[in-house]
Image 1 (tube, one colour):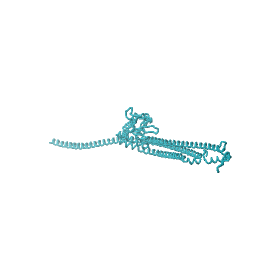
Image 2 (tube, rainbow, N blue to C red; image 1 turned 120 degrees about the vertical axis):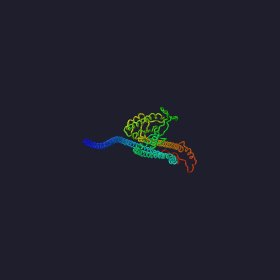
Image 3 (cartoon, rainbow, N blue to C red; image 1 turned 90 degrees about the horizontal axis):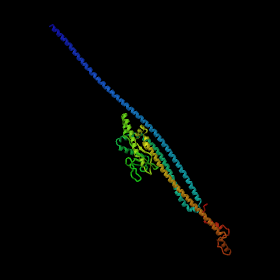
Image 4 (tube, rainbow, N blue to C red; image 1 turned 90 degrees about the vertical axis):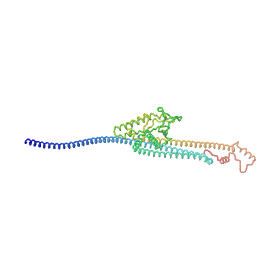
Length: 480
């Protein structure tokens, strides 16, 4: 019994201990589960924070890379802007020098016109005075209409010469104003040409035919804006033909030769201009988000321009311009997107020189505008020179006619002098001398013949009759 009680007490104690331990273990397990869950949550949170930090680091690195790219692009744009400003400043200085030279030339020509006009006037005054002084009153009255007929065309030609001088001065003034306006237009158009060309290029990105048409349209508008006349100063999409009027075929491609523009110089020379548009790679460059993509697009852009140069050089348009026209030693490759051209030039400075070695002159809108303006001024000066030559030819012809008229009048005066001498000699023979008619008449009178009343015979050596006859005839002399 005691043993049973002992076992019972021992069992109860063991049960209590076991129950306590089991309860304590359960509490510990619960706490451990809570701690484990908390640790897992903290681990997950730490991992998320680490991922966010890593992502933030990548974003920050990308932002820094983009900032560096933008700073590099800004530096490049600043450099291009400075170059453009320097280029524009040089162009403005060149235009000013050309304008001053043109004004000086116009001033010298005007001075020559005035001097020659004054000389012509003095010659005409002297000629008119000599003519009027060499004629008698009767000849003046008889020939006044002839003199007027000669002087009237002369007055008309003098008037035309003055009008030509005034027109030349007005043209020079307009040319000067046009040159200033052209320089102003260049500066204004340069300021916004990059953005406008970029927007239009994006619209034309994947349409090569449309790109070509756009370049040709820009080129045609540029020619018209500089005062050049289509069909006179230049031809658009004109097929090159031989002396028989047949289309000329390229020896390499066996295709017709149809350049975008054939520009005519005033000295019988031709210049070929072909518009070439390279936009796709340039747009890829401007829209690239990484340095590698930008460099790849830039390489493709330069390669595209070089390909256009080789294509234009291979056509060799210069060989097919036939006599009497002459071709210049190069053709112009017009790139209407100034920003794209400057980008390629900045990357490869030898691009322009390499193209010139193949007979191709790469030009943007600014340079081509200046060249076209100079050509237009050359045409204007050629037209003025032709008009001036025509005026001088007419003036020389008229002065020659006046000289011929004066010579004819002088010859008439000389013949009149000879006639007067013959008349005086005949009068002397009539009145004086042994062989005169008066000798037998006086003998008959002395023998008793009667003289007519109021008309007595002159006495020997009398000059009254000769003087009377000479005065009544009023014959002119070259000295009166």
